[in-house]
Image (cartoon, rainbow, N blue to C red; front, side, top):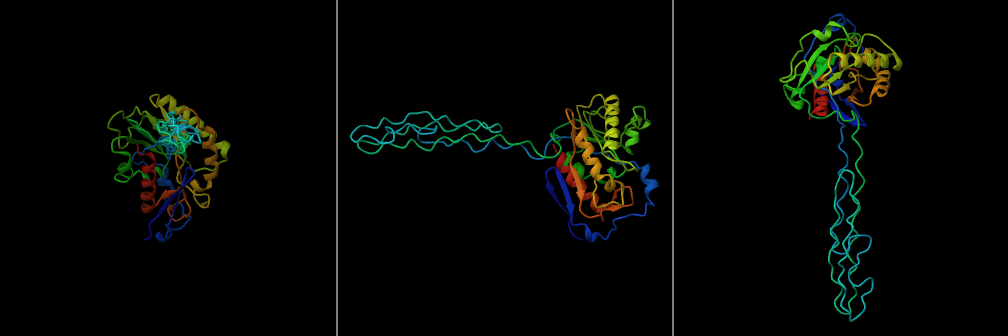
Length: 323
């Protein structure tokens, strides 16, 4: 059995290497009825970008001469023979502080001018500029962080990757709970009974009153970006009503692939990608898109994951959401 690989591309993780599992791309749908009412374990959502901002660039040179553009040391560019160099005491400007960095350029150094007729010291290397601030991380814009309790509002396949010992091994046990595994039509209902059920795998603290909610938009239906945007926005309204304690809402795409059109996550992959991009802003952020480049990680039309594929997804998302 080959080992699946995950590679990150600008906020996406493409999982490959599952061909030897010997699984077909399109399922018969025989398990679909059971999938509709499936319940599973919790999950961990949330924010932060994958990549931290740059560390502010290189520290400005510790310059043993004048640190700004030209060291003032050593009696200028040409020491006059016989005169004692003035000894560049010029303080280097130290470079601009990088937005990520606070890198301080060297103190301009007190390089003494050349003795007697020797040429005055050149004043050292100019202090480096502090470097440009690093850009924000890709994917999920602020998802990764520490939260007391994250509640996962899952689709049917969500419980497949919420695997104790794999996902929890990264995010930490006791910080994630699964409110349910069902379709978007339930999560968008403000008064739906799904909000009243006890969570599976409850948080150690704050269970039922999460400070972060992760929504996985999923359903046995197809639609364009406008269709999914409306559904997601209605679900966000329901979250604000039923979980007012939530400080952050993460919209986590279901695991899918545009080439796997035999299941719903594949059929809706591009539409969901576009819809999620349209609803993010403020306390609503996008989760990490995990994409299979092969279809043999699925079974059935619901997008339910095969066990080995589920472990790969659990590890990938667990690392992404790890505090």
